[in-house]
Length: 506
Image 1: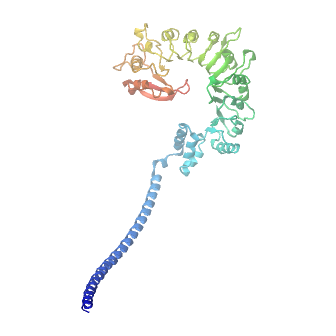
Image 2 (image 1 turned 120 degrees about the horizontal axis):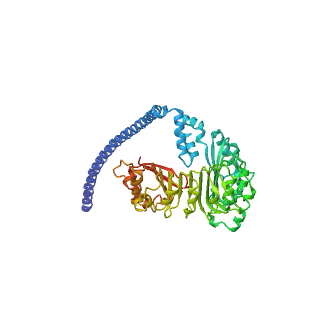
């Protein structure tokens, strides 16, 4: 009984203790709950403030963008370009397209800037008159393109380049309705395979009367042409092409085996003024000149020359520029006389063959040829009237004439000197010597100009593509004279794929 009473007392004390602790726990819990509710209420208020703040930011941002947009519109209205007359913008647009290798892409971009620019672009046909078109597409797309472009070019002189980015058996020229172009002047065709030349002379290829035709070969190297292909090319002759394009005044055929008429055929093409043949089979040069009596410029690349038996002298009255890069027989030269000839350009490895020809043509003012021993001395004797001289190789005779056996400076009438080749011979020392001895005016403190001479008007440095990053190029460009010169950068007049740096100190 005592044990139960003692246990009851113990449980009563424990129950009292627990009751006290429970009251404390409930009080603490109530305190925490109160604090939670206060903080939750504060959090909700903060969330509401955040939402209001976000709305304010959004409103202000929208308003700011509206103001900025309005400011941009006002600024564009006030921009000086807005006040440019339309003809000034036309000139700017034309300059942009002329400087681009993708003129139509530039023209389209300009026409999508704004309504005014679009109106100007569409009313400026010279933005659209240099057309580079790839024929590797279906006939419907080709037709749609030419119908789209023809009203844009209107009646201005237009140049069209046709090419194929995919090597295939047909260039698809017959799908190009070039007759839609009102004033097609120049047609430039790039062949993906050389035998596609037959598509050019095919009557299915409809072309309006043109003045200039360029045909280039973009296929394998000519040395890889098989004997069968050579035999195939006997089937086409230059005369066939000229019969196909009767209105031509200029014809340029590059790196395509060209067969030409023999002397007995006697065909005459009096409308041609400029003729360039990059690669030929056996060529009767004198016969060619007789067949083209109105030629003003003729250029031959790699020529296998032939002289007819019993050849008589040929006098070509109108020829002004004769360029012949390489040939295997110089026996035709004594038969040719050109009373109007002003320029002779050759890459022949032995220029001695031309000395008699040069001496017989006192009208020559420009000569460019390979260097050889005694070249400048001989030219000074037979052609002292030369005003423009270009040569490859060393220019030591020119800059150091007093120590090279000259009694007087070579070529006393010279006004322009062209440094040819790939600059392997143009060191900084040579360049400086040439500039000091012939290009700097006599009043220049470092001039070594002879008292009897006038300084050169210009020095042209011919740059081949593979020489643009040459270390040697950097050497002479680092000289004081290069930096002090007036400079122009142009495409070489006589040599394809080359550039010229034109320097002047006068």
